[in-house]
Length: 112
Length: 111
Image (cartoon, rainbow over all chains, first blue to last red; front, side):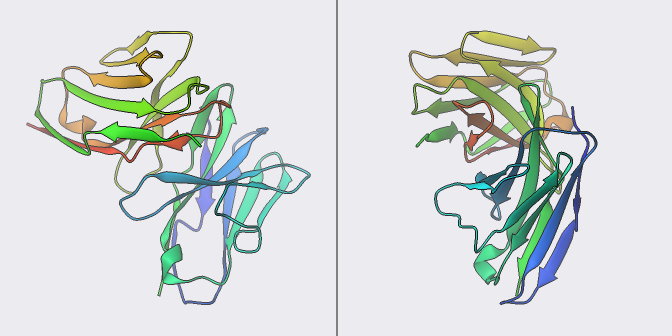
């Protein structure tokens, strides 16, 4: 398995501001991902965080809104920019180890 | 893109009974099918997975079956316990890492 931590665990933010979420893994991994889980809903992949290059975004998600950094093989950040109430969700990072994918505990974001 | 349908959305069983959750997928190229359990306030936890070259996999009280022809797969939990109560998600992937999730099943096991 993998031990994944995220900071902050939750936050309440005002409309128009930005929040950066951190994801730390206990050892080096090749692939890291960011997902969004809207209230009571399923998980949707936002992007793949690539070490040393730009993130790869899924349809419907853009870099200006969700900039991602991946400075090394154990750490990544996701920024939610210019937030609106529709961005209220749980944001989860995940990593692959072998053929399995493991998730962090999530960051619960509320935008007022 | 891949579309994963999951049923039922809610399931209530008595302790000791079996629970079955079913998923269908649309992309015949999908070859990896994990199941996750999510408890309140926590991230999803991988509980079992299956690859397309296998028809069934079992781990203690949990089993997963896959029918590639019909493009559906199922999670079976036997001898359910109250601690099995959670939301369960199925997922499908053709890359092995970019997961497409079903909408989830809220399982309640009553004593």
